[in-house]
Image (cartoon, rainbow, N blue to C red; front, side):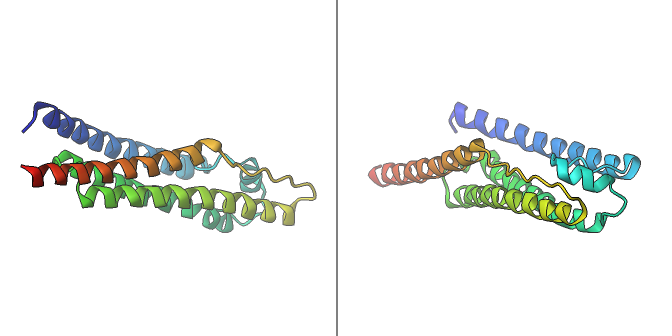
Amino acid sequence: MNKNMHKLMKVSGFFRGLVFIATAVVLIYLGYSYLVHDEIRFSQDVLFDQLWQEPMANRSILLAIYSPSLIVMLTGIYWLQRLLSHYQQGQFFGQAPVHCYLWLIWFKVIEFVIGIAQYLAVGYYHGSLFEQTTIELPIDFGHITTILLMLLIVYLLKAAREIEQENKEFI
């Protein structure tokens, strides 16, 4: 096996472990914030924070609005772990890693759509309890370019796989 391929496999294993540790730290922090300080640190929405502090607001509704983000994040981490696992085994251009990468793209798109829906839902709920409500949609150009870049990488991975297959057939 190529020395660089072995190095890439080690780096993938390192990042896989790093993702596990980062996920655990974030989940512990979110749980601690909720259980000890009675705060939700998962949202950066000002309207959500106002509603969370409002005694008339139903916190179950607020948690239901933001729970899809947590689910999408955890599911995305699952697919990232699978992708890094394939990379750790030296499978860089196969069908399975591309499949995992495509799922990551889908979850990035879902995260983008859910983010907009959550801001609208929180804004609507805020409007039902407060007289003044201003909704600002967080359409981040960075998310759009990240999704487009990820699609380009999938295209490059598929092209590399085809070149690898042609080289094997040639030999």
